[in-house]
Every structure is written in C-alpha cells, then in structure tokens.
Image 1 (cartoon, one colour):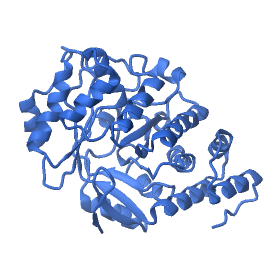
Image 2: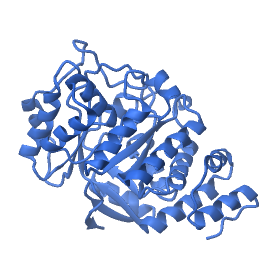
Image 3: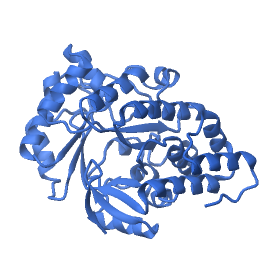
Image 4: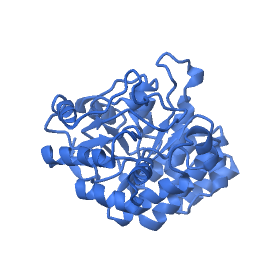
Length: 364
C-alpha cells in the first residue's frame, strides 16, 4: 500500500514500516508534528492488519475497586480519599462478594482490580481479596494490582517486590493490569505522582512478573504536562523491556480526564491528539501484538475511528468503571456486548470475543 504524499520524511518512514524496520525517536517526533495525520493512520492500520488482520478483540469484564483510601497524592487523580474523609471506603470480604454478586453474569471472564494505596490495611488484605474471589469464582481471571501497587505492597509488607508477586500468584493472581505507569520519566513522576513507584520500579515490577510467568498489560496516561518526546521515551522504555521479556500483551494509551464531566473542551485531549497517539503507538511499539482503544476515555465513536488508526482491541463491557468517571469521563460506565459487536462491524472489522490472554471465545 503506497502512502500518497510528497513529503520525503514520510516516505522514508513508510519504507521503514513496510520493511519491518524499527522507528527512531526522531521518526516518532516527526509523526507527532506532521499535519498529514491520514498518512500516519494509513501506516498504523497497515501494521495492525499485518499483525491482526480484520480482527478486533473485546472481553466481558468487571471492574472492582476494593478501596479508594490512598497514601499517594497524584495530581491527576480524583478517585482517592484519605482515611476518615467523606466518601472513603474499604470493602470487607463480605462487601466485596456482595458487590460482585449483584453485578455478576456468567459471561464475565475477568475481574479487573485496582484501588488506592491503602496503608491502613495490611498486605494480607490485598491477598485475601484475590483469595476470596478465586474461591467463589474459580474460572474468572484475576487481573489485579498495578506495578505501582506492587512497589507499595513491598514497602508496607517488608517483602521484596519478587516475594510480593510470588505471594499474589499463590493467592490466585493471573495477570497485572497496566496502570500506574502514567508517563515513564522522572521529570513527570516527580511533578505528577511523587509518592508512587519510580520509572525503574514500575518497569522492574513487570519484568519480575514476566520472569515469574505472568503476561501483563502496559498503559500511558497522556494529555497533561508531558512533552511529545516524553511520550516517545515512555514507548521506547516499554519497547526495550518487551525486547527483553516478551511479556506484554497490549499497550493502552489513556487520555487524561478533567476534574469535571462538564469541563470545557480546552481541558480535554483533542480527537486529533487521541487518534494520532494511538496510531504512533502502533508504529513505535513494533513488538506489541495489540494497541487498545479505551472507549471509556475517548468515547465509542472515536473508538470506532481508532480501529482504522492501528487499534485491534476496544477493551470490554466494563461493568461499572469508577476511576476515569470520578475524574470527569463523559462516557457510560458500561456497554453491552451487542453494542461492542455493532461498533466493530460498523468499522468493517471482525468482532472477536476473547479471554484475558487473547484466546478466542467467539467470533461474530
């Protein structure tokens, strides 16, 4: 497929992509700056279709946030509460089961568990959360605790990060979600999430998990103070670790959500930035199988567009997502399987219901 452009640099990048050559930081910066967004999209779609054909994946999943009490002070978060503050909660195991029972259906394949860094409870609380769910729902995959939470658990337990992971796996952990990465540069982290895991600690948590046999996820929270170069540094650090371990299944760019649902357009990422970032992610992360368009953040219609900008996954039915919505996401908190199938077919792609590990459950 030829890229119809007179731009010499875009032609060079297109040739690299078509010959499977890795793009450089300089290439990535050019892709962020070029006004020729449709050529960037065309290239990303070409790479995705080479990897995944017309397949677009989704999963029936349930979000669980066992506690919103958190010691950290991340400037982008509106979910956290301090112990004793109005709205603060920590679920007991009975409350956890009650929460799941009232939202459960037999098609749910994954519990996605993320919460606050609650230092008012011991590490055993986090282990018991997994044990309880695994006992009552043995066939449901446990996707729990970010790389930043792994570092936090090590601090409150006195265990090493590797020991923490081994205990979690013993309790029934199947995979780590990709959260807590934000932007993997120290300039960003010192300003935006100074109390959480460093760049190296987050990467190390996933490297350890891969070494222990877990496949994991990776995210990037874009649209605040980071530069375009920092987005590319973030992608490159993930790419380097993937070269080493091949343990990441998917990359998920997440648009920062403003504090209020009624926040102005000026406080949200633009549609152009969302689509460009997804497409560049597909082009830079040549060793990742999947790039996910997270409909909770960018909305269902942009998600449909993203399927021609390099995305092969649109996440899941997501029963009651809270974290993005507490920060001003305007989307619904859940979506039906029929709606996801309709969305994918509307982009002339093939809907594939999957499990956590991209095994096919059903083709539509």
